[in-house]
Length: 121
Image (cartoon, rainbow, N blue to C red; front, top):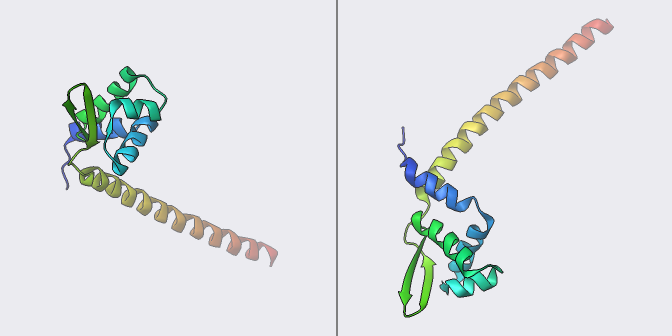
């Protein structure tokens, strides 16, 4: 069984649970940006954007570097392989459960049709 670092997964999913933070990651996938630039793009205060970037930093999805008065943000070096593996494992589980449910439903439908034919005779 695959073991996951729960703290890391919790931090990643918490970071990804917010639309603004997902938008920040999307923006940073195109180009590095300062917190001021990000705040402007998302119509947000600097303090609000700093909090969002902090959550992304704790999840290691973003890194920042301060040069003078400007803090530049860029995507972190960590990919989301562990998170993708967790999602895939659960997707397979649910897919198997839905496949089993489909078989039960098909069996019940066949039985219903057979019973209806017997009643007509």
